[in-house]
Image (cartoon, rainbow, N blue to C red):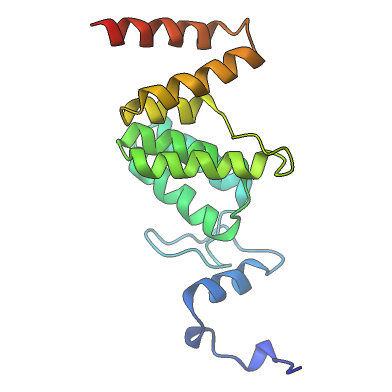
Length: 169
């Protein structure tokens, strides 16, 4: 087994993903200096909590594209952060990036659900993305699963009625 001394490796010679993973393992990134448009590194990475807060702030300011960029950078460092995947799916839906939104929502559900159950993941965000993609049958099935789990949820019941009206028009 070969032992690699990390301090002898030139970070620029590593594949980008390996370099970022190594950089993300540093214990205390300095979040004060964040150059605009740079790929995150220990010197400019916001961290999970601050990254999600910054993305939400961008959404509130009407800048969904910036929120998407922030979340994608965050997920490069924290690829199992469920909240970030969920928020990214919503942002991508808002931007009309339906395919990417479905992939993000699905990833959040994969991380959230117990893989031993064998049940298909279901979420309201994913159901809406499927509807937007004109995959009406799949969207309806997912919505029905969710309504079965929460039969008194007014939002889901209203969404079912809305979809019924849209389909009859």
